[in-house]
Amino acid sequence: MIKKRNIPYHLDDPQTTILHRNIILSTPFLKRVYLKWYKYFEEIYRQNPNGNHLELGSGGGFLKEILPNIITSDILNLPYIDKQIDAQHLPFENNFLDSIFMLNVFHHIPNPSLFLQEAERVLKPSGKIIMIEPANTLFSRLIYKKFHHEPFDENAGLQIQAGKPLSHSNQALPYIYFIREKKYFSEKFPNLNIVSIEYHTTLLYLLSGGVSYHPFVPDFSYPFFQFIEVLLQPVQKLTALFHTILIQKK
Image (cartoon, rainbow, N blue to C red; front, side):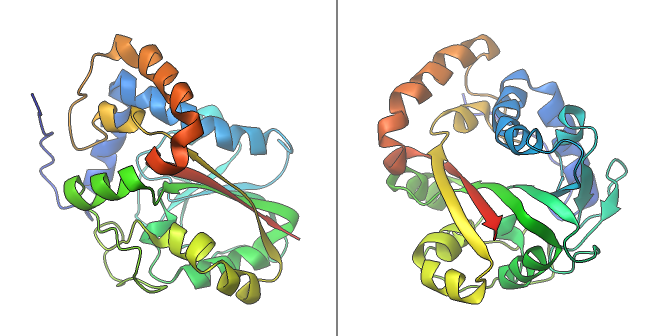
């Protein structure tokens, strides 16, 4: 039985993000999905644990519990973050950051080119952006277009409407920038190089219910579905809901 969560606030209300955080932390299946994703960030962090690391759009996440020395931030004024930051205007000096971590953030930035320009400026040489974002696959298009509240338009332009940080989005923006318009990206940001794009997570997040629904399966079934994800790895470019994009400054 599909059971939707009761979220009494508007999506752009900071109270919604705080509630999302509580849901993530109190839902074992969903929390394990986040822990799996955070391992991508931790691998980059461990390469230089004494460096300057920024998480953009910390939102309802809990990355600082895993990596205590990172700078957490969000465009919303949240009580548990270090800085309130607009990704299009990063308040750091040139060549300051070793890495920028982003989980479901890029597709909410009104003008991602401004963010990439800023990232190019504030990252040290060999500094990295690592983002986990919705993927454009045969299965993900079905899910995102039919069953998700956020738009997914792979034919759209390079910007989205500004003004509402969460409800204004296009989940296909990562595909647009780093796959469809890869030539534009390379010419516009010559000091940024797309190192890798890894497709993953076909079932786990979906079955967790995310922050909008209660889990569709019991918590103890997580290892079983994690094994299914491993079996699906050869076809993830057709089935994955997410991909991890690694970008490095030259």
